[in-house]
Image (cartoon, rainbow, N blue to C red; front, side, top):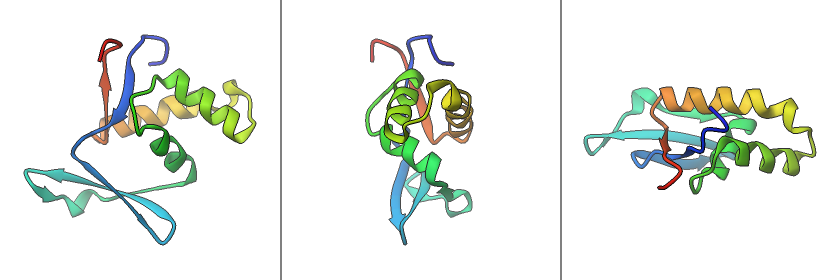
Length: 100
């Protein structure tokens, strides 16, 4: 996933809300909220989600998190890539080409 030049961003049909200090994602389908698919993010996923306020490559996300939490890149790269793949499979994020 990382290294192919593609970036990932939040899907446009997902509403983000902070409730009691937790980040909650609610997909919107055909103009209605899909409350059957509400997603509560843990702290790590919330940190990644916050970074996806604009398109970023997985390598950028890893670098920013490594710097923020003062951990080695290799310690978090696999977890970040796995999380991005999971968010993608749930249609919460979308992949864009290097030219978008």
